[in-house]
Image 1 (cartoon, rainbow, N blue to C red):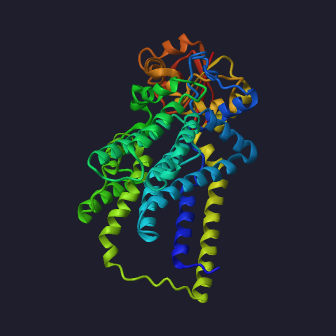
Image 2: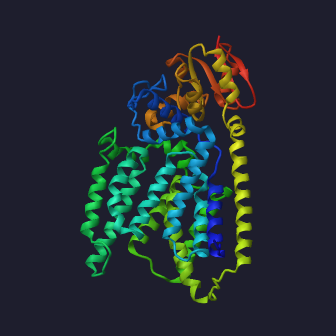
Image 3: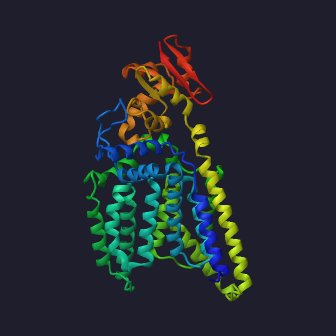
Length: 470
């Protein structure tokens, strides 16, 4: 088979996407997702109250990611961390394959826009349920843009989505915006491949499909409760606005600036639907970094469309004739790129244990595992998930990354009151009869415990210290 330069370029693009998407597992929430998946898999039951902490045991827990967690655990059981890394890298690459399918100017302009979008979204990549939301969002946009004969797929996909992640609300927003655009087009006399009535029926079916989940109607309000959580906005880094001084957010800046500049110079009008989505998710991404990936999959086709309009007429005709010699060279280049990509991904997979040791208190937790904590454990917020994976059910945590379960009041008035080591730092520890503390050596609470004669350090390394009440 003759491999043209265009096909070679496209193949290299998707290999690059796979390399960008391949990440060591470092998300603090991954660990409690993994343990939840194991719990569901082994008990054949979905928990609806907190089972991991002793501070909020029995408190309602909306397990909106239960199906993702089962998938995560199944992959882990089948092939441990490599299976998880490779599968989620493929999911991310597939996400941007759907973006590429919507993007004009193939292969060169389209590849540039898609690659820039992937780099912009990269800070959020990993083995996370959010990646399934990104994939399904990309599929919804592809169907609504390019394959309206497949609109009937959106309601069953919504059923899948609402059981994978609370980001299903993104799908409803996308369909609603397209419906609004079709209504305006119909009122202004423009023709469309689908009538507002058809799209309205699809939207209603998607809205009804949300009910098909273990949490029932609670899933209609859960996404909005998360968005309005004061503690999440104030303390979880992913919810912060992007800091453009950090290099990881600069591709987002270039994608945003490039899209707006291309629109200004090319002068090609975009549709009302594109305008609403682009404006809305620009604001969302500037407000919270976790929204950047959604902005990226919306902006990439618009950027490519504007660039293609700007330069298409100036491009010389492309010679698509492929000689045998050229085909052989292209195959050799592809083989080298595949080998280099495989080597890079292999290095990432092999580095997982080092990342785990560097980011989490692996040695301290192993110490607790062999010693068996003598009483209730106070742990650092970002380590809660890791403790759940390593020590549950023998040890339950004080707190973990499920901020929605604990609530703003507990995080601010209980956990942080102790962590910050203020005048009344003892009160939360006494309230919950804490006798063991696992925390970073530089934390204010660690300094207080080190000075208090009632507490003693029983383990310490550069990453974590364990205190025990005498």
